[in-house]
Image 1 (tube, rainbow, N blue to C red):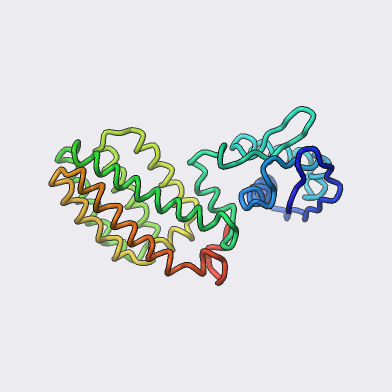
Image 2 (cartoon, one colour):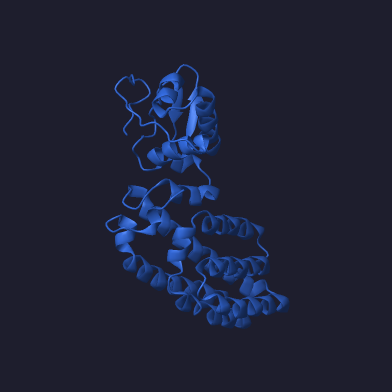
Length: 265
């Protein structure tokens, strides 16, 4: 769905009615998906409220609520005399909405693989830099807590979602050991991603036994208090495992094969 620029009339636009249910959320999801996928371009002007509400089959109050949500996140802006204008979301939307972005597009949409790869790279960066700082700053209690989590993780090899939550707790201990509150806050976004996109999370941990291999490396780095080894070994581990994962799931990511990734709420 390509929209005209802010100075172009919108008489030729067509919209499919929104199904009943959580109507506001449905309108938000429809518009957000089209914006993220590039079907509605930054700088475009949405049709007038009356026209857009009629096209979606919702009342104007519902539409206004949906538009307000998208404006609060950073996708839209209402300008006097211009109506509602689409903003460049890459310059406006915060990291806390990474999971939302993943849900907003389907495999085969341009940004889909980019969002997934970004999440993988974010995980690697957090693990590497957090561990480097923790190697220099941790206390014995942090090592003890990590060893407990590792033993618990070994019991979750058949439950990807539980394992992912355990991974977050493992990273949380490292973030606290790093004594860097910014890392802890960024980690909250990664944790939210796993919860918001459970189908993708299950796919990410399709080989949990491989994921377990990083834990002994982490313990050795901490025991050696070697920040340099953290910055060398951890990115190498994730680069290899993530590239292998991307190759295994290339068809699902590009939308060239059916996948449960397409079962978005």
